[in-house]
Length: 110
Image (cartoon, rainbow, N blue to C red; front, side):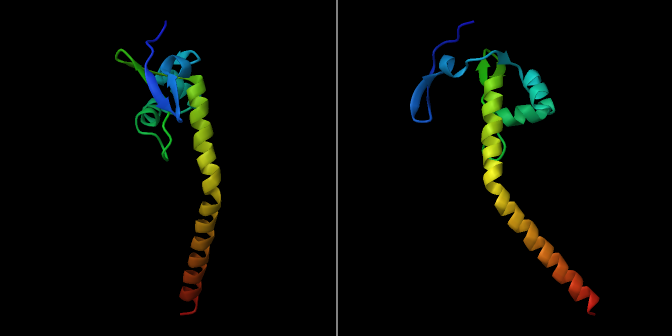
């Protein structure tokens, strides 16, 4: 099936949807099996995203589709954000451990 050319501005370059969709279309149910998530979670990834990263999807008529390549890009972007946030999370965890240790010390000295 040939999709209608619809121009979108993506990443500073003009691309058409047919240029962007290179693989086989997946329904949200198929994508959820690929991601090993509940279908509601996959819908949330498509419509709202997680941590500022949205799973690319397109409406064809009244049905929403994505591709395996879009799922792969989604996971790469999501994990790239997670990798950069890891040191911050470690710093928060060690601060919480110090606070908990100080609180325990204060309780035992009474």
